[in-house]
Image 1 (cartoon, rainbow, N blue to C red):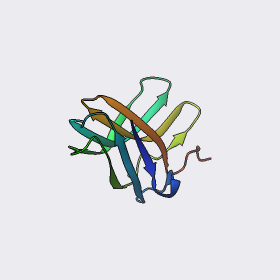
Image 2: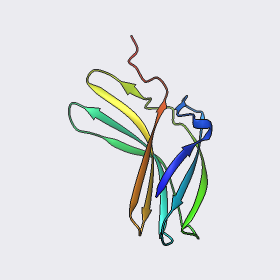
Image 3: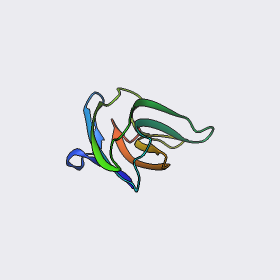
Image 4: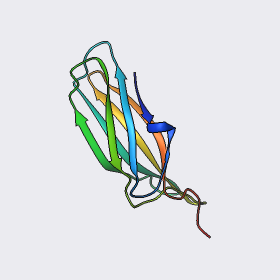
Length: 115
């Protein structure tokens, strides 16, 4: 089991703001590694695109635990929900051996098209 907990439950961030989260894991055996990422993804007509803005990997010394993450929200792209395209951000948590994945959506900047 893996998950993120956002500090004070805040999931909306301004560009340049500090994203504070805690990654939490609990497995039957110690994972080989754990990677946390901040990723933006596009959805809509055409090809889906994604890019990792921040990535942090560590080797845990226990089968259960937590790690504080403190990242600066990128200036762009901002979250956008338009008619033809949508850009959203997510925190991803992935372990290696055992293989497990978790994600949590966040908003960076405005979520709606500007008029």
